[in-house]
Length: 235
Image (cartoon, rainbow, N blue to C red; front, side, top):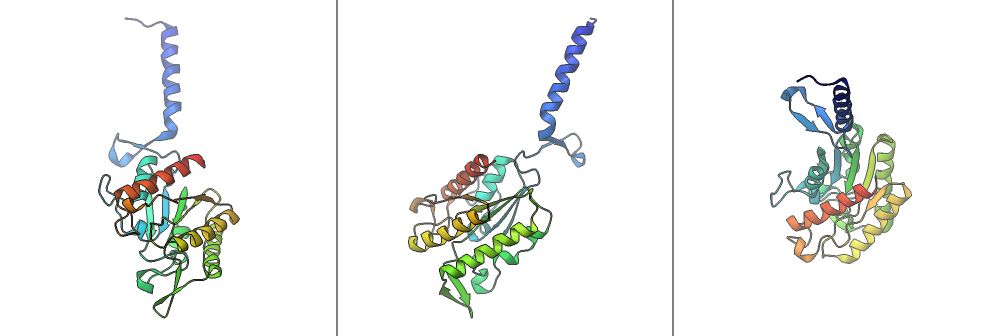
């Protein structure tokens, strides 16, 4: 059957429109032959997360009881997520029972290839400061200085193209007084630095934590939902 010139032209136009619509969201990966790999619209260069145990102790296995909130958010946005996290750490406090590092010590997170999005998840440990291997209650001024210094560092080393997001510390039912104190300081510093702040207040209820602090799967899902909603609304 012979197609008319009009039909041929119409077919070509339809094909070109289809290519134009899908091209921004699909990349060819030569190493896998004809396999198509979806490119994240919100984070084509990936997401980097700097955090504490609420990031560090969880995995990247979809559906697993210990799948991390960051993994869930990455799956939602089809984005690769890289974590730089250590239990017990924070803006102010060094992790690993006062023998590890603070957020600012992890230069790979801000001095390497720039991600599309960098999320800071932390503050839960910053009610205290390590001195001589022991924990002492931190003052507001000490916490404020540490948060300010770290956010300044991110602004200095990351390009304008990287979206920096400050996550309110996911705080379970234990020690609500310090939770409110530390969260207020972090939120104020995020605002001062012109960075997006995503609240997690109320995400970790007593039924969503395993020890009063760390999230179970429902807790990680609750945090992930806050992050997903925040990233969507802040675009």
